[in-house]
Structure formats: structure tokens, C-alpha cells
Amino acid sequence: MSNISKTQLRGYETQRALFGHEVFGIDCSELAKQLRRDKSQVYKDLATLKEAGLAEQLPDKRWRLSSSLAREAIKIMHGLDSARRRYDEAAGRYGIPL
Image (cartoon, rainbow, N blue to C red):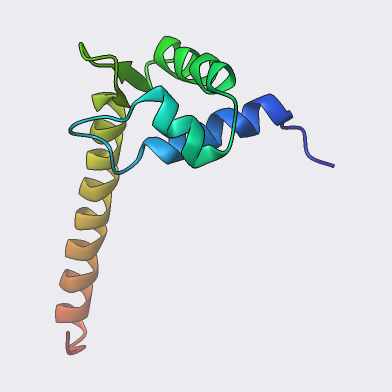
């Protein structure tokens, strides 16, 4: 049995639905339609994500992911780049073609 509540899962689904709207954002009503949920429910989820620093509301009232997620994604990319360099170095030492 999962330890994650339905409310938490709904919040994660709302967050995932914001991906792809990083520049111009998405209106709460549009998001509610996309998620097939009540607008008030989606707004509560967005407000919670905002409080957690994961979403932001633009001056035109549209919503998007906050830049904090982009910063975390950049950390992942740096880690992958570092791993790739180490792999390439080891492959070169052992004569493994890349």
C-alpha cells in the first residue's frame, strides 16, 4: 500500500502538467481542463506548489514551473557530463573505442 495520499499524487500530477509551459505559463482553467479536474482543486494545488517554491504565477495570472526546478535539472546535467568524462577517460586508458 502506498504512503502517498491522493492529495499528494494530485499535486504531483499538477506539477507534471506544468512542464512544457515554462515560458508563457498556462491558465488555471486550461490546466483544470487538461487534468479533468475542478478549477478550485487545481488552484489549491498550484498555490501549494508556489508555497513550496516549485511553481510561480505570472503577472497575467498564468502559471509555470519555477526556476528552482531548472537549477536542479542543471545539477543533474553537470553530474551526467562528469560521469561521461570519467567514462571516456577510463575507456581511453583501456583502449576501448568510443
